[in-house]
Image (cartoon, rainbow, N blue to C red; front, side, top):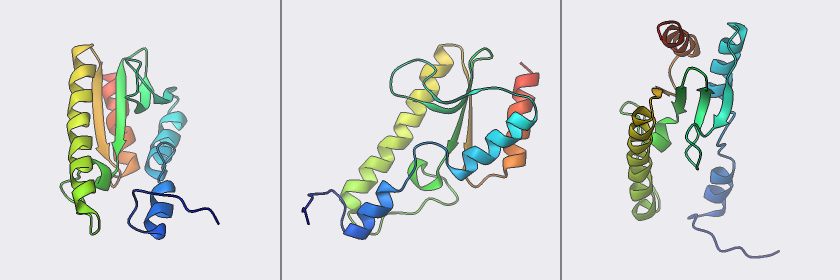
Length: 138
């Protein structure tokens, strides 16, 4: 067996972190299904301004970027939890995620984009309705 040096505090933590998905999470897929059923077409996991910052759902012609943020990774005020292990590593990382979200929002808005952010725990029907309303009211 090859030993791999890792930032993870345990093998279980490492496996858990590797299983986290960047795209196609259940909350995203549920919302996308509803939007597609409503006849809307969009880009998935797309960088509206180029570069590395990607939105979960993007309506390029309408310039609407939708983010469905994970409660842990993006600091949900209702459900975020603090890391139990390796907090010196994780707390600054999680804080930087939130800062990056605000920077991304500001960059997109400055470029004329509408930014819609939702939490993973929000009802997919309500999220998709809000997105559809934003598109119709544009």
